[in-house]
Length: 479
Image 1 (cartoon, rainbow, N blue to C red):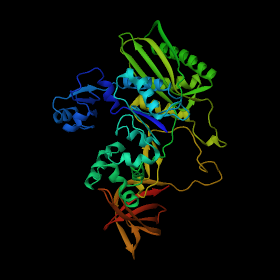
Image 2: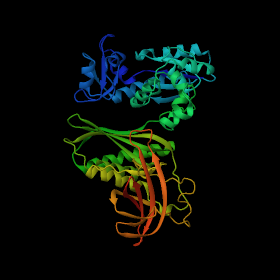
Image 3: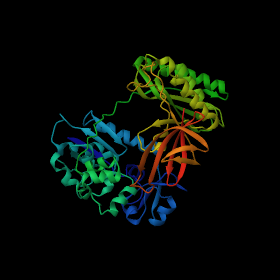
Image 4: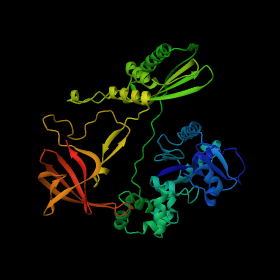
């Protein structure tokens, strides 16, 4: 049985502590002016204010609402303090998100009602609307906190207790909830009664999880949070640094101290945070990540130098603090044929310099399964650490397969011989493979239906072309 501690609209609850009266209407925004609404209370929601609206839109909808500005570091500090208090209940605490945590109570003294009372007593000093419940899995336990505070959900009672709850408990996109409302589905019980197969085909693979949660089933594993080990070095009150070389010298001294502490602890840092205190009182924080966790002061200094390129300080720096965050076990993964792989730390330094010099965000293409060619990859933050998955890259004797390079879509003139292309833009087709029928997105607003061919042209070019209606387009070329 899991113990769930949940604070609805946690960021707003933290911001409004000791502010106003219980009858006031509150909005939480990222900025006071021209900002976006992050969270709204129940009264503001009933008046029409919604997350994602501009502050002006939400204030018009909920006339007279008070706008609070989100303080992310303060909210995170409050949440970390709450998690530390819960360590007194059990050493196994799963930090799911700010405002939601799960505690494994197996082997703890007392009954479920005793655990709930202890959790309330431990968090009473924070003056937040804490709800506590006990249940068989993560989703069911969090959901029954909305049934009532102190609810105890037995494994066989989950579906019955969840049935009256509204779909918003699933925490899915508002557009999905609106589509379900159009189908007459407003509660978890109504969702659970839908046939599983047609529902998943209509809303996609992720809908399988929604359907399981509505029936009280959640296979999400319990992940205890690791205990934090603070390693840092600081230099304050030792004069000021007005030149670039002085700053780098001070950073090298701090990096050697931090890396020495990391080596003694048998750890490596995946993230470093540098805090600069200026003569005029300004504080500036700079986070630097690594392709692989490291305890090497030379690598640390190289990354910090790359991060600092392009930064301008108005006044001399009077204080420095270097913190090692996201500590991991020391050691790196190596491969038998690593000579053909790029050095991840070198790539990380190059990416940082690109961003510092030209404000260029380096992105990496990630392959994913999809029917449409243009949907088979996505761009994200580079994962520079080398990993070997299965047989990929571990057999140098195997030849590299031909890669399809995406090209800007343009219309081409195609002549047919029977039902297959005979020429493309007046270039004879030597060989042709296909067609492959692609019919995707029929359940969404954009429906794509087309026939794709691979054509080998007379000049040796191998193209991927497709027919959509009566027109032909080129989509990619094989390298």
